[in-house]
Image (cartoon, rainbow, N blue to C red; front, side, top):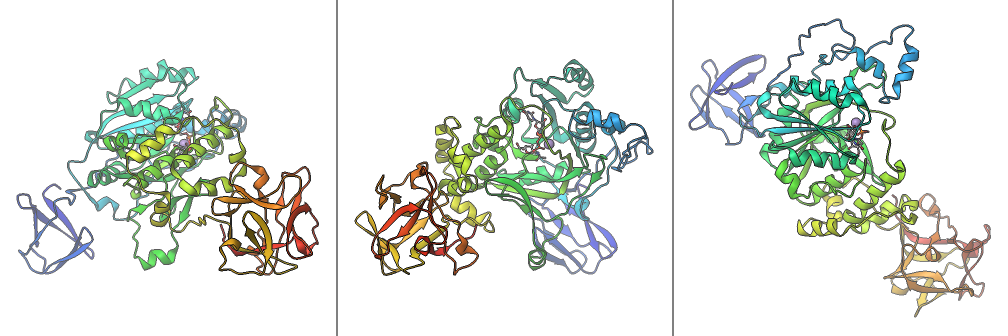
Amino acid sequence: SETSFHVFISKKIDVLPINQTNRTLTGGSELTRVNIAIKNQAKTLNQIGEEIHLPEDLGMHPVLNLDVTLSPRNPKAPGQFGNPVVVPFGKEKEVKRRWKEGNFNVYLSDLIPLDRAIDDTRPSGCADQLVHNNLPTTSIIMCFVDEVWSTLLRSVHSVLNRSPPHLIKEILLVDDFSTKGYLKDQLDKYMSQFPKVRVLHLKERHGLIRARLAGAEIATGDVLTFLDSHVECNVGWLEPLLERVYLNKKKVACPVIEIINDKDLSYMTVDNFQRGIFVWPMNFSWKKIPPEIIKQNKIKETDVIRCPVMAGGLFSIDKKYFFELGTYDPGLEVWGGENMELSFKVWMCGGEIEIIPCSRVGHIFRKDNPYSFPENRIKTIERNLIRVAEVWLDEYKELFYGHGYHLLDQSLNVGNLTQQRELRKKLGCKSFKWYLENVFPDIEAPIMRASGVIINEALGKCISLENTTAVLEECDGGSKSQNFNYTWLKLIKQGDRCLGPVPVVGDLSLYPCDNRNKRLKWLHKLIGVLHPEQMDHLILEHWKQLRCLEANLSGKTLKATVCDSMNPYQKWKFEKYYVG
Ligand code: UD2
Ligand code: MN
């Protein structure tokens, strides 16, 4: 309660009163010795009457286990308690027919109560965690386009039923120009029974990113909490998120995203100890924290997990902070990449992304988007990612393009980036290198694919530059003119100039580097990574016929000539290869 502090000693529970005026904790009546942890610092009360001063920002009350669905009206209803639902005999066709309405089992969703109970899947200890009495209020923002009726309603009911009312300023349902009739008048009418729910019908398709911004613009709560429109919030989900934002407004708090099975609609818990990460070329993924790390650092199931990137759909962020950060890049279209953008921005500009294990929300994961994209889906997502890479990745954008060469070659119009780049400057954000080193040190991000001298198999000699002409010399690792970098974009670089063939003649010379100039690109299969003794061709792919770099028999000159797979004069090796 507000004025006492629960102390657990093995199985016995005592309640110690908190003195509200000077915020002290006094040893209880029957106790002789109590160990407690306050903000991770162990303290001991040795005798009755001894006092401990509580830090100002220690929580005041245990998380409210508010859930009016814990004893459901109809315990026998299908899907109750998050149990799997079996498709009734003879209904398989209907299930199949209705599947595409949402790309999950829509038929079963309609059978399940809108306020079904689900298991409290929080790790033990969560229910006893203390949070503040004066947490900020939040606006829940749920964007949707053509969402399934029962799923949308279940999402809203789960928020209403499992959140402390005083913390919910409003629930904003942002209809992103849905085509389904029921999402208009019928939805407005249904929601009118809940004074806190507001429906905003956008007049044209905004895409999820700008739809969220439309919601954020009119939100009046202190904190913005974004949710997808096919979720079920679990018991006690909200306070732990708001507590983090309360403690530091630059913390962006994400719940653990649990799984609502797309086939049987069961509510399935997930492993703890997972971080949100990305793999090149910037795809979101989950990564388990290795058991030895958990052991070593004594990480508890209830501990907050810092994440390089967020999944994107579900999080709480201080409203003022969100606007200080310039919200999302409004140039991002429809779907995808906005989670990367916000994550990089938050970390690089002084904030943190956290997963809060005591906050859990179920989400229906689907194999495909059930709505249409105004333009090509893949191109839209790629365009968004390129915007993010161009603004935030610095020199590391080469890794992004290097893992998807087509991304660089595309003649996509990614739009103007000046404003986003200026925002980054204005906010004084750190470099992507800093982010990799400090936030995501376990990613492999070698900036080069290979470097050092380039050795020829037949001659054992190395490429060297005399003025700007490439020749062969005895290898000397210390010589500047023999040192090259082989980049993700297939350039062989020395300083800011690149090795390329002299037109027609085929001699080798140095040219100004240009990531888009295909004449300067050398394909090298990097067999050296696996078998250090092996060497491979350096191939110019963009001549009318493939050309390979070949050392002249004389052992002095070089040229690009017709490839011959067995010729050792055409095989080369860099001094050093980097994995990645
Ligand atoms: C994930 C995120 C999602 C978003 C996306 C990348 C979770 C659980 N979900 O994909 O929130 O970050 O990655 O962009 O982390 N919507 C609109 N207008 C549109 C398209 C979608 O309002 O033009 C709504 C849609 O109805 C849904 C939400 O945006 O409520 C997210 O879309 P999704 O569920 O298709 O994305 P998801 O979960 O596959
Ligand atoms: Mn979703």
